[in-house]
Image (cartoon, rainbow, N blue to C red; front, top):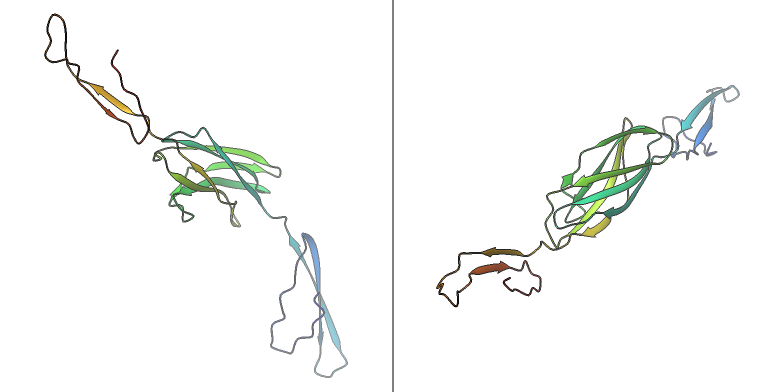
Length: 178
């Protein structure tokens, strides 16, 4: 209890609850000023869901695997929000888990852009609501250079002009024909 006296018709201040059983006792005086009625209520507060976003792995120009450790304290669907900002914009497929202990969750995501900083976080959705993990970031690698060759031109018995094009995709490259 918070020990505060509250006037009739007025709500009390919030009562902090500990994890586990909390006994709340309310004493209500009658209008005669001498009679008191006592009411007891037990409220059980469950331990919070644990959602720990962990470092991404397998990062390439177009994909990554996102990781989390989650204790849903029951059943949950775990998914990842990700995108170029903390507004995310993309949501991965969900993974269903049911446990009262930490469970490792790994979800591959694709369709990413090369050389881009991505924000991501794990989210556990239960029947009681959703619990997000912390925001982390990773950067995708550059796209590999693209090279194309054409047919040689000006072919003679002693020489030929080789034709080709390279898109370095922003990377320093050295080009040669073999």
